[in-house]
Amino acid sequence: MKLAFIGDVVGKPGRRAVRELVPELLNQFGQLDAIVINGENSAGFRGITHRIFQELIQVGADVVTTGNHVWAQQDIFRFIDDDGRITRPANYPGKVPGRGFSVVTMKNGGRLAVINLAGQLFMAAFNNPFQALDLILPNLEAETDFILVDFHAEATSEKIAMGWHADGRVSAVVGTHTHVQTADERILPEGTAYITDVGMTGPHDSVLGIQSDLVLKNFTTMLPARFQVASSNIKMCGVIIQIDEQTGKSTSINRFQLSLL
Image (cartoon, rainbow, N blue to C red; front, side, top):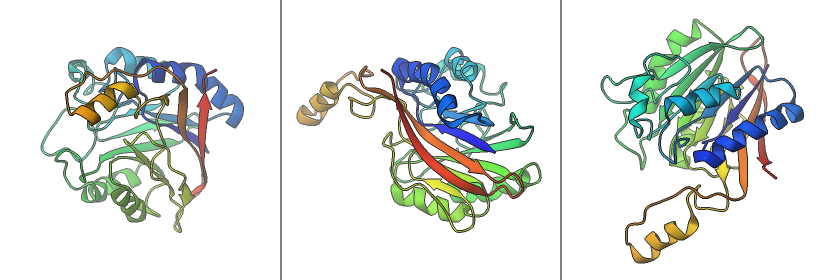
């Protein structure tokens, strides 16, 4: 089986990239059994709304994951409890709306579980993501052998550690949040596909999707600047993962970057 994970969608440019480039992705890689999209920054550059969530579903997403900005748009509280295709980090402390994982039926008839976790290093006060994974996995392993983890984290070391912690227990661990695609994709010894960050879907002539001049003003003067999403050199970044249908272990992971003309 074959699935795609599309990296953090940033604002209107990112949504346009998904809308126009998913067909090209299918032409290049063939039929996909599932598509997972991180929608963390799809409303402006913080959060997601119901309308945008539906837009991502309509272009092919089977599951939409989020991260530390999940609550940035008030509209999220209107639908996150009611639709099982959107997730928030499972390791939020206490009881919060939504769910930390989703199980969906893929086009091949199999069941895919997607777990959403957030890192602790240089992030908000999340509970331990390693312990959260350990608590979730026993329940999901009874439902499916196909499990993908979106680890929304800042620190490379924490992401790599999660890959080793999950090796042989899930099909894939993909990193999100930093918006810069890394070149370390690999299959770990026990069959888990891993990449530190899948990259950003949005304007790459920018600072992580934000207009460069505004970010530079903030860095050089320390004065506040109202950030706005950039608009040029729009790309869709992500990975294609092949998984053995008999074992649930991954056989390949390949990065992609598709550009809007």
